[in-house]
Amino acid sequence: MAALGSLPPRLLVRWLVGLCLATGVLAGCGGGDTYSVDEGELSQRFLPAERTVDHHPDSLEALTISEGDDKVQFQTERDFESLTEKWSSSLQNVGTGRSFRSRTYATFWSLELSLMSLQPEVGVLSLRKEQAREVLDDRRAEYAETIHIDVYWFVERGMNGIITGPSARTELRVGEETHRPIQSDHGPLREAFVSGGQTVLYRRNSLFFPRRVGGTDILANASKMELRVRQTGRGSRQEFSWRWADSETAQGATQEAPRSSAEALGPATPLGSP
Image (cartoon, rainbow, N blue to C red; front, side, top):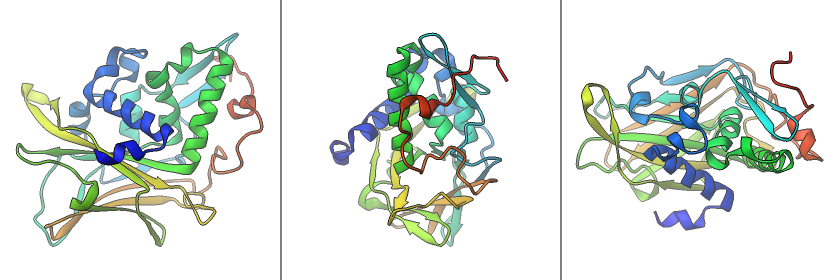
């Protein structure tokens, strides 16, 4: 993991927290089961090769952020694992190589998933309101600049599951343009429990792509993106795909940063209000 030290601080924190989530450490750390993810369980669910969502990834359809007297509050329609599933797609084999079945899936860190993860990462709901606003502002700024995708590559014994570095080429296709990662890294091989009491091996690969290219937000007018992986020695490539209904950004995440922290949160609205 030589590239790990070169990650920007914000991305380094995200990568390390994701590693903790992958090992199950955060299941009882600052969030309880609401903020845990079981990769083995998720890999057994039906995840489409093209994940279709009815709103833009900049929208907060499953998460409402409001303010109490001294804290910010999350009102969620899904737990963290369910929200992760919402933004995950399964592997599709494309080309002349041998077709194979796999548990492998990829998760695109949408805005709602990125903001909700701040609870297991830093316990944002326990921070004072001013501190929480700052943390939320920082995450929004990070999201507006970087497209983050995690690929959970499930392997047989003796395989490595690494798709970062010289052993594989990864690229993100948006419209007619193709983009290479600005940073990538992978975690250690881990065991995940699956049905029947068995265990399988997987490796988490983290890919970070630029959201702004030549001063333009590449997702601003897009309604689809594809992650393509071509591994050395294989005649085929693997793809993960996401499509959303609205081609316009909903939260202005790609525009100029808010002038104040309160502006980023929006008006204070008690939980339960319309």
